[in-house]
Length: 195
Image 1 (tube, rainbow, N blue to C red):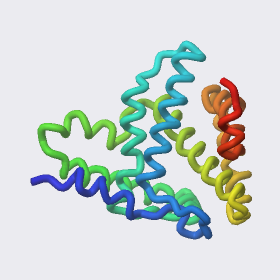
Image 2 (image 1 turned 30 degrees about the vertical axis):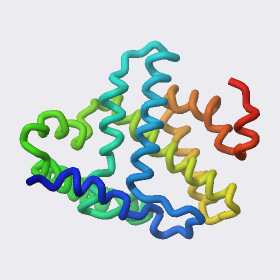
Image 3 (image 1 turned 45 degrees about the horizontal axis):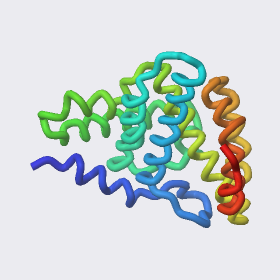
Image 4 (image 1 turned 180 degrees about the vertical axis):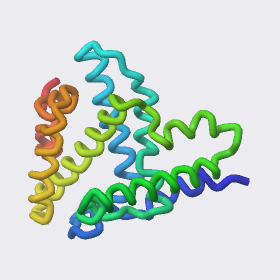
């Protein structure tokens, strides 16, 4: 018996944005799904808009598992995780150890396929797309909270938008220019938008 997939299903019990008042709580499973969807979009933009090679399926799979280590570590709030270089490095080590623990829980027959995505072995370029998708998911969460009247996320929205722009990633810039504005719309407005 192996516990890997049973543990993965528990991602839904790990809350995000723990230090913020949320009008719509978000868990790691929901977040991971959105990051995978956004990674898929960025990968398609890279391949189909900019004509650059991209292993879209591999990136999407890695994005699904990008926060899997949090099953064992929990979600450390951003102000703590990124407080200084020492904490960041120590937390990276903890995440790495958690990934190896998870890999040891994968059925032996599947380890060869799952280990590389758990360890985010997608190359620096692929990791940057997933990082951008992660930040886009955070920015969308901030926009949704603001639209719900929750100003708790105002600073996070500004900081996250700046962080995305600082990546200077054409795929993310293209997404933010052409696709992100629709997240400001309500359902009726979305239905009136023509392709």
